[in-house]
Length: 337
Image (tube, rainbow, N blue to C red; front, side, top):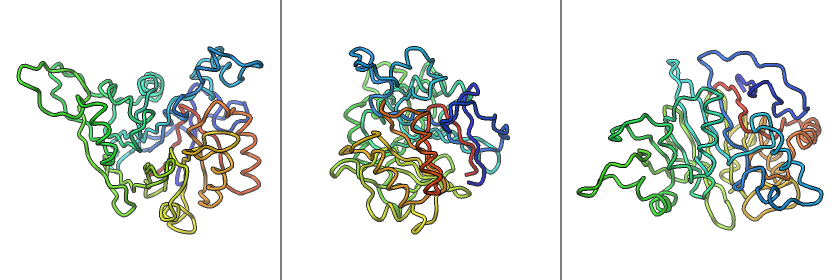
């Protein structure tokens, strides 16, 4: 990576997993781009509510921790997967691009937008139309300018036609453009819906940054999108995947399209397998095939203990020669895009 440093709020442990506060990163200049992990958890998030209202014996250590440690200090507290790209353009202007706005979006805004001083969202990109990727769309209005008449510029939102068709049914009031006669103005999120193709050969540009769609399999035959972006540093974000089509894997592999500086990849369970997500063994096998310089894992359930499992990953990384860690909510990675 051309420039990368991990910044964790309040000086608490980073994704290194050693349990000790890391040295503070060098302060970024105003010309730095960065990635902010707004959420690194699965659809049900962590803690798993069932563990708290129907506790096991012994109780789940990861979920129980949430009762005594504030989320800002607890790397095992995880909201729905979402990434914010703070893209510093060549002239120095910052644009804020968010990938997915799930069920926990409002909580993520209150916690991490405030912490990292993110003032707005300039573009939205959706991986797919499942609940943990879109159910925060109504709350997008909180990151838009206030106008009693809703006379504001709509935020561009990039998504597949399949996702568009589904969202039109779930959120018709966010999609329709014209008020019926006599209908009062409602202050709802103003969105400019832009259809993208699930095609490696059809990149698109959001807020000045080019993205290549990465179609992946998310279940038996469901197509979800990951995204490849960055010129100075190459980043691939793949949050929901059970299998890579050969063409997609080739595009992000060291032996194919060229080595990634950073791979952000799905990893649901610590043990076993799942029909719509990669889990620990499958994720690490995919990382060995793709061979990025660094990988950060997301989509984590309460089976994942940040400190213990990152210690295991440190050993794996030394053995395999690829730096792999669990990401955590609030992690900010400075990177030259």
